[in-house]
Structure formats: C-alpha cells, structure tokens
Image 1: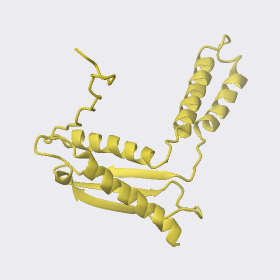
Image 2: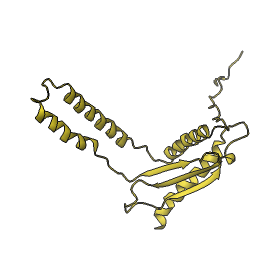
Image 3: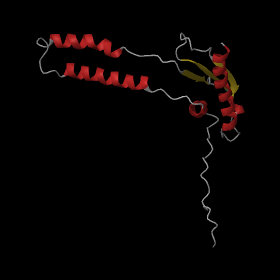
Image 4: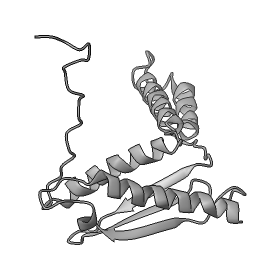
Length: 172
C-alpha cells in the first residue's frame, strides 16, 4: 500500500460531555466545569493562594495542637507552654487576604431548570471593581435530549457574560 506521507491516524476528538438530565447535581457540575474552562480561555488565571494559605495555617494549627498534647512535661510544669499554645492558636486560625479578581457563582435550584450564573468582583470596595452581572437561562438551551452538552452555545453565553462584566469597567 502506498503512502502519501500523511499520517493515517485520525485526530483525537474529545468525547462529548454528557450529564444525567434527571440529576440536577450532575448538570450543575458539568456546567461549572465548563465555566472554569471558558474563564481560563479568556485569560483569567485561577488563584489558589488562599487555598494554599489555609492548608498551611491548618498544618501549623495541627502542629501546635500535637505539640501541646504530647509535650514531655505534665500539666503543672508545662503551664506556660500551654498558655503560649492557646495564645498562638487564634492568630494561626485568623488570616486571609482579598485580591481583586472574579468571583463566579452559579445556582441551579432543586426542581428547577433555571441556571443562574453571576460574575462579581472579589473585592467590591475596590476602585477597579465592576458591578456584578448575571444571567438566568434554562439548562434545556444547552443540552440535547440525550444529555450531551452543546458546548458552543454554552461557551457563547458565558463569554458574553464575561464580556459584559469587562465592558462595565470601560463604561465607568
């Protein structure tokens, strides 16, 4: 068999994303995953600093608790150490920071087909904060009868909402 130099293997096509239409949690989960993809494709990055900071603080709190529990001296002799651990605990539990970014929230009420997507600023008091934008649409607009997500339609709606949020900044 002669070959023209082109690869005979077909390009890999991603399988269609499918949800159980009788399960609203499955539908919401699939839509939320796609929103993340759309937002990342628009140039926004996911900020995991706060989550990582919480994990670090949690590990420090656990370390202090373990140290207080298994300190070699018994109670009357380790009173100062325990007071230090107790005083340190609230400071380790407290601590978060805000960054100006997007907060994207979605709602799909139980026994409803109306999906609501809201985009707002992470810091509404900031000068660069925009007014929140949202839309509510029936999930039946984005799914076939077999439960396959029509990604093109959904991406267009989410991209339009992100563009509306971004245009708020320019129109101020």
